[in-house]
Length: 216
Image 1: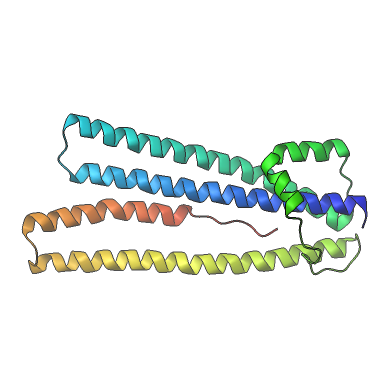
Image 2: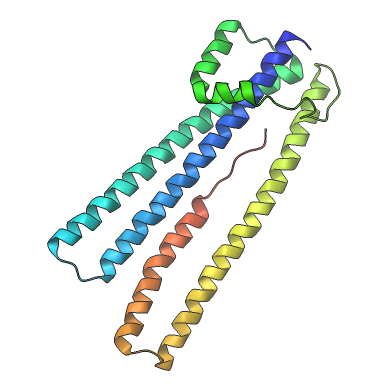
């Protein structure tokens, strides 16, 4: 296997692992945002003294600040990984050269953790089904294969996201429809309705911001 192709494989694996890291930070950030939202909901429902209000506000801010940091980190990782992915595709598919200096720069941008994972977890030899040599046909087959798996991943995640959203909304409407039945006291009914309408925006906002790790 040529040196160029080896560099392309290494770049591709670095991009894949960097995408994974970006996705993990993204999901953790979303989770922390939900926690911050729940803290806000709880603070809105409880009658609190000034000290408790301060503590709720402080922890809500800390969780939200951590979430923003992770989201920004994720976006930076995603951008670097996407650039690596394009370089790897051209190198593997068309034989475009990558200098040793540029490879060193890519490894630096990926970070020590990612480069160590590449060394201990190399990409499988048959990752791409294409058996073509370094010609445009190989790049085309690699792109088609990547798009195929990405489309199926989109469809899989989209289905489950819509299911979770539908279940959340259905349960909310069931609860709200039972409130006029006077099964619980009027004060508790209002509290339940208030809680639901505080939680629903959190669920809706998380549904539209969830992303996934691309297949490359």
